[in-house]
Length: 97
Image 1 (cartoon, rainbow, N blue to C red):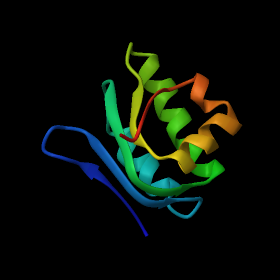
Image 2 (spheres, helix red, strand yellow):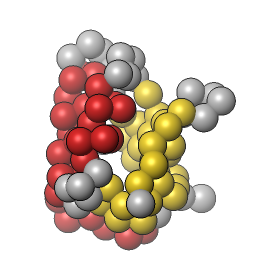
Image 3 (cartoon, rainbow, N blue to C red):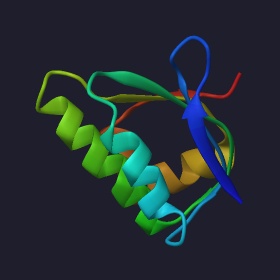
């Protein structure tokens, strides 16, 4: 199960498992974002290479207009995936408190 949406403050909340089956849904949602934004991954349990691709495409597109994605509440498991893939050097990442 995967869900993505906006909270009342305009932060994007992703929860569940962002895998190849859910990547098109996530990409469609993120394609509607037109400015720098915060993506809260506090409830994300798993991200596959397809999910990483969604985040990378969105980040690159937003950087083209002077923005980007800031990832917050990143748990240690997801943080490890970013580190192993080198994505920790591409994104501003704030670990879970």
